[in-house]
Image: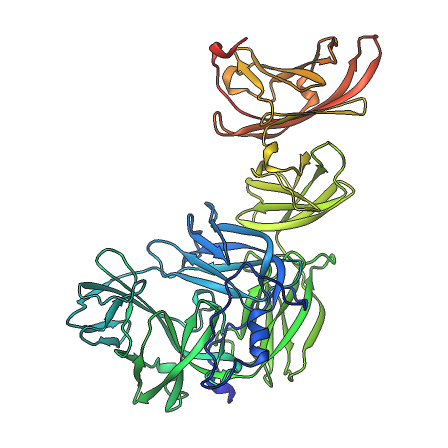
Amino acid sequence: MKTNYMKAFAAFLLMGFLISGCKKSDEPAPSVDPPLGNEVPEEIKKLLEENVNAAVSGTVTDAQQKPVEGATVKLGSKTTTTDPKGAFSFSKGQVRKNNAFISISKEGFFSTGKTISASEDGNHTTQISLISKETPVTFNGADGGTVNFGSGNSIQFKAGSIVNAATNAAYTGTVTVYAKTIDPSAAELQPGTRRGISKDYKHSGLSSFGMFAVELTGAGGEKLQLAAGKPATVSYTIPSELQGRLPEQVALWRFNDSTGLWKEGGSISRKGNVLAGETDHFSFWSFDAGYSLTTISGIIKDQHGNPLTQARITIKETGNPATSAFGEGNTGFDGVINGWVPIGINLQMTIYNHCGTVLLQNSVGPYTFSHADLGTITATNTGTTVTIAGTALSCNSDTLQTGYANISIDGINYRGDIVNGKFNVKVPRCAGTPAQAKVVITDATHLKLKDTLLFNVTTDSLNTGPIFGCADSQLEYVRLNLNGQIFNFNHAESPFNKYANMFFWNIRCSNSQASVWLSFLSLGGITWNYPNSSAGFQINLNGVLWPEMYYDQRKITITELGAINTGYVAGYYSEMTENPSGQQVPFTVYFRVKRFPIDFSEEP
């Protein structure tokens, strides 16, 4: 393979790498047709079917890098939607090691996705950009027709060549065609990864000379496809910068969302400056030359020795910076990179921080068929940071010995280890403007608080106070540590009595051992105007009523203050109290309850 054929590559998602045995995956088995009269080679089976246990998160944007909210994201059998920042996440589960496919769909955009290489126990991140559907063209399915798109490109449909994709029934109504060319140098817009399985079942890297997306829909919005034995003819004008490089014949590849890789589907011939040939299926198509692959791995750290999280890495041919990347992707929480690169080519690795600033450029390669370990690569990071620290507790108010603090800020996800109940995560930011941080605590057995806790970030540090890593039923709770004795009050098991008036905001809760009354004095009335508030506390322990105590607002730490009716109030305070014998004993109250407005009818 000559290097001047290699125009565009994105074969490479930079993720953690660790070999594991095969396990049952949450993803459906990949669909691979064996060669005629033969079985699929064992090395291809292993490549496509080997699984690992991993978590995946990321962001979805449009072509202008603006967040896309409400996109449907699927990873195997799991489904979620993106938040207002375009962010999504999947907890750990079985995914395919070499070709975990994250599919994305959203009205008004082509359905697409990204294929990543995953590692055992990995926490991987990625970014996926959507391509908008624009300027549809229609024709009658019974008659056929010609659809023109891009600059001098066309598709010719035969009469009676359209079927319903779900039922395979003939379709003769109005066909709406969305067709769009994709810049082969724009790796972020390309589906999957620039790797594929050739006709002779070789795992190959792909160099694209052109790429396009086509979707067919019926009058009722149903998905349509080409009928068997009635292919469409595609004509594609070769971009001027590639006209001197393109061979007389080039392979035609179709993206296979079952495997997350491309599949060779024939060849297409050059006629002057036009590629022309037939296709029997529409999705994403690419005109590609293949190249041999090997793997590399390494870890990227900043100047302080910390893993460089959410760094973007590109690998290009040395001396040819105008071409797209052989490899492109993002580091995970541990700064590890891993992926596939071409053999025998001098390469340049560029490391960007999440703000898009170039931190380092290094020459790497050329590589042989053997795996290459790049070791530790140090890149000096720039920009501002915020340190987010706190204490993690179990549902019983015990110190959470091990686990993770999962933090999202500015639409980017980070993770820090919990050690002996403490976490301290230094998060890079592009600017020091006020923002909101989302925090979820996960314990070693992956129990986690269902609702994310929100914190306002206004300085370069944030102390969250104690956060509980609990099961989903613990959304509303009051927990009391009274001189070392733990009392848990769970609203889901025994509903709290909550009421408010113009001066007080009250919670009463009980279990078989005790009952607790909490009262917050609010100068702001129903708005619960923290910090202008003090708190009252009284406990009835085994039928014995302890003295009532009030505490100054300076003793109270509020960790969450959501909207009335939909949000939660969470916090804690610690003080000494007097037992019925007159002795002073320490106590700490942790609480999280849903906010509610004044309703005098609820007062007891």
